[in-house]
Length: 122
Figure 1: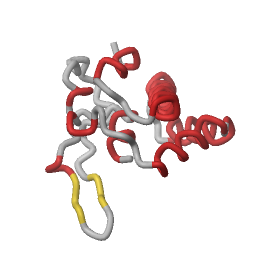
Figure 2: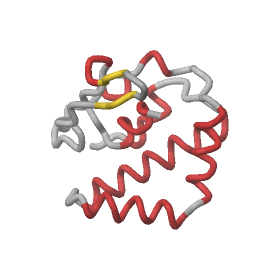
Figure 3: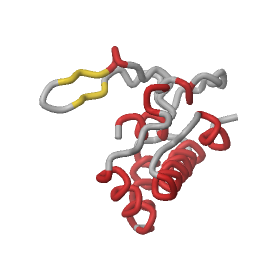
Figure 4: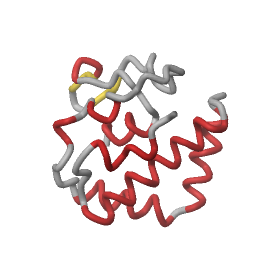
């Protein structure tokens, strides 16, 4: 779930050192989320451990629910815009989340960074 979130928010510094594991997993250090750097070719490769791994059933069900719920998607978009991110950044987050959800509901895993390439910032 964290990988999907960090990919969708275009967090370019998501690594094992930026999480705290306790009773739950807490992501920390979001300085590079929505970062304006365009040099992000390696972003999709940050989480190589997850490519090709079957997603847990709960994640697939959540992806299915998300894709079916247009109101939820619109609320998310408005919340992102309410955080004062540029409209195009908020819309890009939603597009990436839809893309990941579609892949997961279709085949249950993401096989490679190339599957995500079309949703990279230019």
